[in-house]
Image (cartoon, rainbow, N blue to C red; front, top):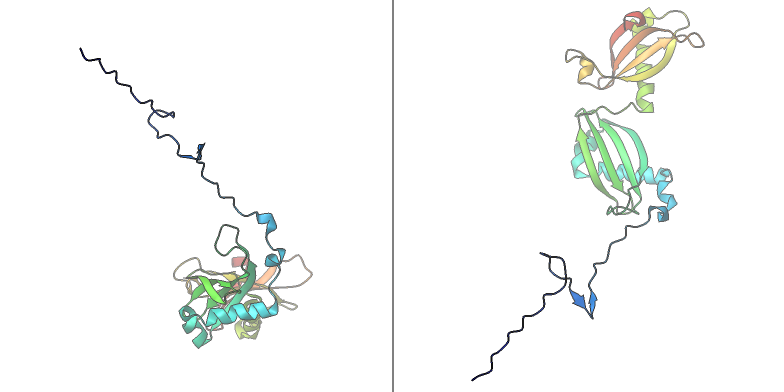
Length: 220
């Protein structure tokens, strides 16, 4: 009579039910290496320094030489609102690069231009062109005041001692208002050294450089 064979079942590998056992390399379970993000504290402090005049000039030149802003540069009717350093954190691809942010307003097409310039590579790495209205530049404020002062209607409404106190960005509240779609400034006239009360408000269209409204301050 032949001897009966006894079947021996293989022992299952240890591990959680329903999950494959971890792979073993040289008898040790393989553990994936975790990526460690660069330490922001080790960033170059010089990246936060204000832009030098040379860097500002390089940033503007790079922007106007870009084909997407070629029409703005060709017509030449634009105003730079600000240029400032921009720093991005790791793990962004531009971390560690010297960057500049340039905001300009294109009068020829009534649009705002917001660009990021990589000064190390000399290229525009980000560009937004929208119908947004950025704040007035110092040059626009001075221009609005000079236009308002030269307007005869404004001069006729000024009281003795009145002078321009400030110029603020003005955006019309209704579509019927010319300043609703055109870049404008409100120039506030009053007396210096008083209680700060205004006398006359002049609205200046910065595109055509003319006064469009002259309003007594009490009804503004």
